[in-house]
Length: 355
Image (cartoon, rainbow, N blue to C red; front, side):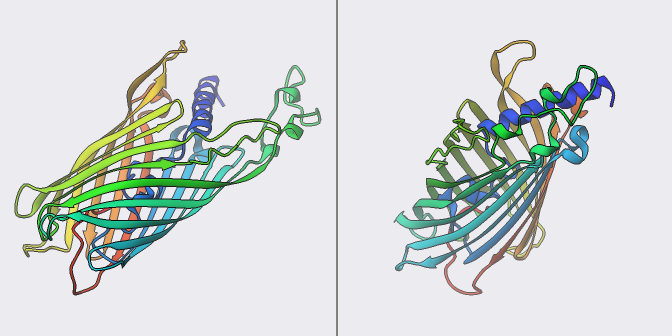
């Protein structure tokens, strides 16, 4: 490997390790992975059941086969709790793996919510939702794939020399607790226009996830402030803006953008549509050659989402514009998502956002 490529790879891995210490995984299509965004989104849907899956690949242009791979899966539904209220139940699992050491994070959680109607009629009904989530977080690493400074014999790597593996744990499993609130409002009786906002509190237990024996590295609590809307600007056209702010320890990230939604069908209520849009992701970044941190644009995200009946297909691609643009050649990460919903053919539909 050339020195230049080795240097850029080291930079990427160091930044990645910093993210591992301070942040959770993240998705550009954050609204699809709603159960990891805010437990209060559990069961918030017009239909009765939703299944969502999302896959992300990142840093492949630099790290090659050691690229970051993240997969998330969610299943949720809602049941009546009286004439106007609902109870939501959900299960989410996500797996993240990266690097030569196969650093792996697995999280599984059960979530529940209560959807309380606080006013309005079918054309402008409002709901306040409280949600909670309990689960576990497991992390593992393959230490035998790492190279230590003590393995350097002065001229080259020597695997027979003693290493530092006895200072580290290779597997960790901790309990995890999250909570959140959400408000949403329908703006017409056909659910063509709506608005929502919420805040989530992840990792309230602040568990110790340090691989170092006797080490202390509590996982920072993450605050997720998010919102969005869907508004008709024509008979078959709507704008769909979304935003999310993530604050976790010293790390801050902002995702904001909008899509334009077009209905295929000429019918008043279409089950076929596509959405195209663009998002910006910003984050606090350490300036090269200094210890100063500033907030800057990390990536521009192109988005395409298509709906065919009960199925939603999504694709997004990150165009890297950060300080790593030289190493990544502007390549960031791509995501694929799929959402399937099960609706009753009859009965009142709940006017709420579509995740």
